[in-house]
Amino acid sequence: MVPGRVCGSCALCCKLLRIEELDKPARRWCPHCTAGRDGCNVYDTRPPSCRSFHCSWLINPELGAEWRPTTAKMVLYYEPPARRLAVHVDPEFPSAWRGEPYYRQLKAWTCAAIASARTPSPDAWLMAPILVYVNDRAIVMLPNRDIEVGTFTPGSHLVVTEKATASGPDFDACIMPSSDVPPASREGAIPSSARSSDLKMARTAGAIAPISEEGSKP
Image (tube, rainbow, N blue to C red; front, side):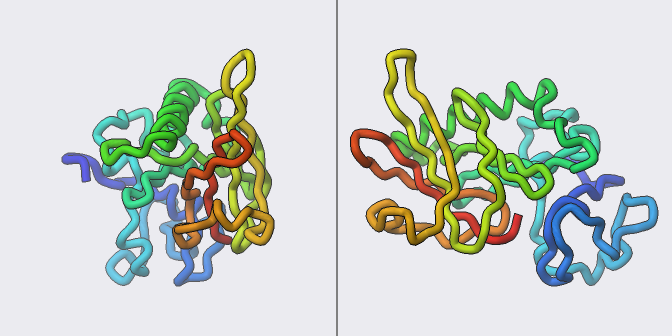
């Protein structure tokens, strides 16, 4: 936790994220949230997933006050073991992530993640392109464009490809059923995640194909 930072009156994660123990779907307020949407009525007995959750603004000192969820209208969730970042946008402000200074910073992070995935480093904090969730849609942020890939289903994979062109690298992305992803690309796959994508590197037909597996929960 960053010294001095607390949730305070912010409870946006209680709206945007799914809480499995309570069978609460994503993008709906938790029934235990206070009437003012600024706290929890069952804080002392809250589920384990709530106890262990910390948004990126709480734990990353590099994020300034503008990234506080109630200000940014989005919740950033970082998973250290997989070095990945998911952005959950408040559906009441679906374009918030495209505003500044957010979009510029998110794009810089996803470019760094792609570069780190090519040559894995223990010092790289991101190893997967950033996924933005707006309502039930997933948008992959890539260096040259952002691609809406739709909705993840259990066992589906996010496949990101890179091709060399005369004007520079061209990236594309799509969701595939695991049965359609080449076995070689799935070797060592990390178990499905509840909130973001995993990145793997496979080389096929001269192209770099980062492969990730995504779970059923946003």
